[in-house]
Amino acid sequence: MTWPNGTPGTPNGTPGTGITGAPGTPGGPGAISAIRPQTPSQPRNAQDGPVDITSADISPVDFTRADITRPESSPAEPTPAGERLRRWRLVLGGADGSDGTGCRLGGTDAAMDRTLQALYGGGPSHGPGAGSGSGSGSGSGRGRAGRGERAGGLGASAPQVARWLGDIRTYFPSSVVQVMQRDAIERLDLSALLLEPEMLDAVEPDVHLVGTLLSLKAAMPETSKETARMVVRKVVAELEKRLAARTRSALTGALDRSARVHRPRHRDIDWDRTIRANLKNYLPEHDTVVPERLIGHGRAARGVRKDVILCIDQSGSMAPSVVHASVFGAVLASMRSLNTRLVVFDTSVVDLTEELDDPVDVLFGTSLGGGTDINRALAYCQSQISRPSETIVVLISDLYEGGIRDEMLKRVAQMKAAGVQFVALLALSDEGAPAYDRSHASALAALGAPAFACTPDHFPEVMAAAIEKRPLPVPDQG
Image (cartoon, rainbow, N blue to C red; front, side):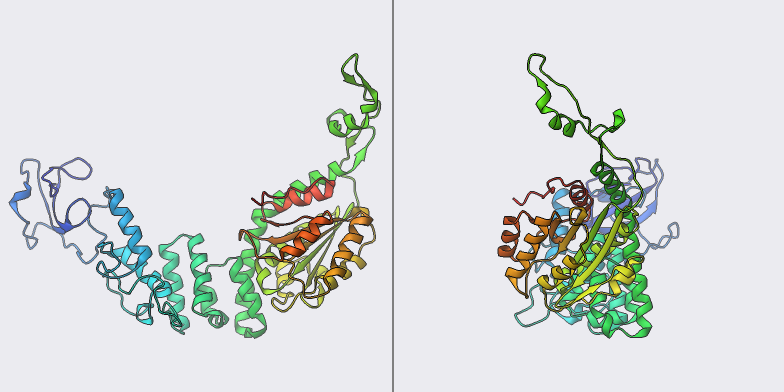
């Protein structure tokens, strides 16, 4: 094989085929002009010119596929500069160098460009069904639509959107697909299309999609409800698989450590507490503490040892937190040593404890949206506390209170004074820093109840600390 620079050989280093390049292809300035068999005794020079592809000694080659530029056994690595241009071209959009990169796309890259153009481009002509050639895509660039104009053009057709959803799952990893789905729902107002069964079959299930479906469930036709439940159940099952075992392990250990015994076996001695309890027996001349009294960890005693109340704000902005909290509620309810209660609220309060056997039922029992009355919710939770010193109340809310602020803070102070472990989470999701009411968060912190956002992976550690009555592992806010 001879490349445009005149170097003989094949991609794998053995003779066999001769390929000449024209401007524009990887490994040469252009697209493949011809392929034909060669033998080692017949080397080919770059200046010999293109091969006659009508010759009978070659098989037909589809040159419309721009991604077939070299034998698949040894694809050429793009140069770093070329790869940067390619990525910028996909980011910027635009046709024939109008984006400033001068980079033309073909094959898979062109198809990826069309899916991006449909969502982030400048008009409906670029949506699915607007053409299927392998050209370089067109448009004025990502997100360059004028003010008041909607960018992208998936149209109002469920089949078109379903095809587009299939395309993005082909070209992008799951994490990117979820972001693009969320953008499509928000930017192109596709919520109504999610009520159609064929759309639900095409989407990539994730926490945000579950939140959208729950907000639409009142308008959902019966033909779509079962499909929606299947989507929700798939997401819940994935979350349980990821979180359940770790949560049970962390909390079981915390429950054991929270139970104290005074005649422990050696391996169960809590040395920190034992030393603190015996500091009065310090002998300076021997530089030692005499352990007159041993304190140890308990062991899996039967019966309920802690009461947990999850109090969840179900306003629209809290949708991912509601999904995660429902899964955690089901996991905690499955532990015999915990008596778990789950309460959701907006301006009213609903106790969903009876549904905790199935987190999908919990989720479909919520009603996302509406106002927020934290004070009323905490009043209900307070009425359910019978063992304050053995109770943990977890409030999951952005703290935008629509009720009586002073009463809310007063209830938190009362619970803390009674011995309740009070945990305030601004969010229970992977979303990063949430929006929240900073004045209310500061007021709670002044009461000894710091408010902070928590990821699902960090939640078991927070609960373990609350069970053991240790300082909460508040993430670094800086």
